[in-house]
Image (tube, rainbow, N blue to C red; front, side, top):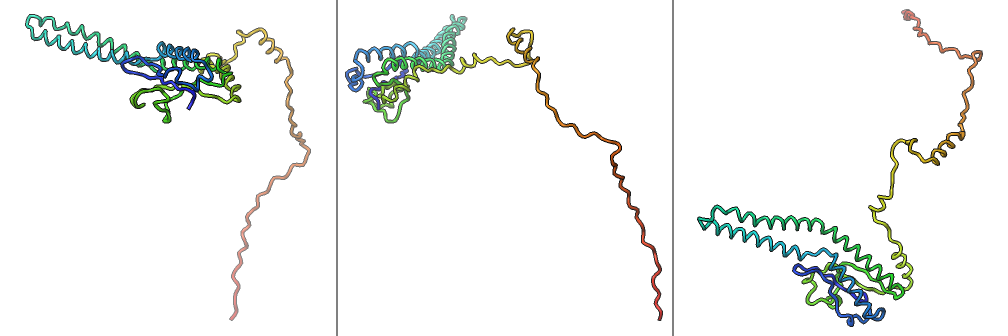
Length: 270
């Protein structure tokens, strides 16, 4: 466990908020920073959450508002149907249904950009915590955020009731660091690698044949100097010359097949 832990709670009927105890209830953290500094840090994080975190309570109210418009249009149509003189105005409820259609379209667009807005919030929160770390480097403390762990308790997060009743999005904690790791943390604060898309935009690939009409004068001079340089030629030994007076081996003669001489069988005397 760290010096202090603060839970970011997402609620369906109210905006998301950062729940924390009073500053006097964090004695371990107050040994490093004052209560005024802690209040200003928590106020900065709360303002960031209120302005950039993708809220879901708006979608909840819009969902029930769309249901109300649908039920109202149905009741209005039934009332017009019951009145004989108002049957020619049955198309009026269709105008009421335009509102739920617009609400459904707008909420679908919000859900489509939810993860993008959440990623933007995480980037801004990480940048904010890095600014805190750069100011608190000499105090041997570090601000960071993480997901909810199994060892988190209601007392440490400042919640009322079991944790299962709360939708904890993330936990912001302050931990004590080893003085030997201060140099490493300072490097992490100063050295921020560019994003993937920013790095890709800086890479230019020259693919295709070389266009000599659109070359820099220095490049043309380098190419001309390169062509004037003598390339080392590779010499290979030639085969020995053929002399006609030299010995020519005789061609092989084909062996003629000689059949064995036929002789009469020997005669025997009785």
